[in-house]
Image: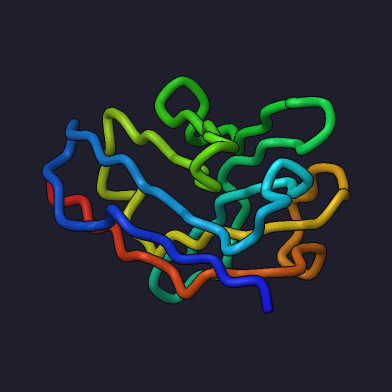
Length: 124
């Protein structure tokens, strides 16, 4: 059973920064495309950022380009999401998701494994 555990969420003021972490319980972590999604209150879950397991390509939703950065540490089985210059519209539960040996995908239904999420609240 593949498990993903997120951490790093919290309350931050607008303009501040947070770094989210997601640890996956798989020794073959390097074979997983890792992605972050988020779900704001009353809205559908949306793609935020992804790191392709094979090409190393990084992909971001337009609203976070230049502010968020996804990275991974294969030795620690961990993917990160560095979030800078946060604004209240970034308030959401952030989910880590994974696909085994598959390319980047931006649809919720394409992801194989999910974490339980971590809440990020940005105050104005």
